[in-house]
Image (tube, rainbow, N blue to C red; front, side, top):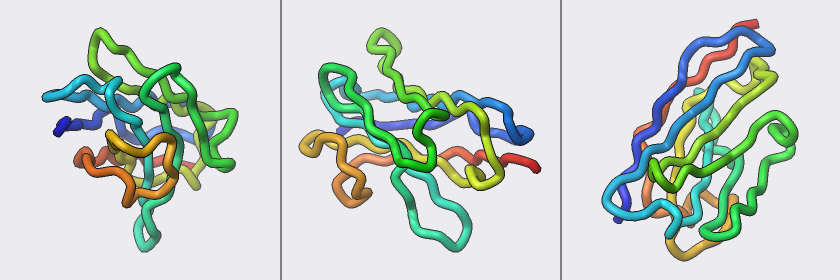
Length: 124
């Protein structure tokens, strides 16, 4: 199993940017589809975007399309979530997750490995 650790969260003003990192260990992250999810207080965990195992194809939720970008640095065994034009509605705990068997799934139950999460707060 791969182990995942997120970092890069923090407090940012509306319109600002953050880059979240999802550092993998134990296995090569490119062997997995990686999803980013977020969960705001009192709400269910929601799909943000995903990166498939090979080819670098990504998919995004409509709410973040055009603002967020997922990328992978294989040399660092790390996946990134670049978040631009942030809005207060983006405030949540962000999680990265890995699936060895499902590709680009939006369902959190399809991901077996999860990081601990990193908090993102966007001030208005």
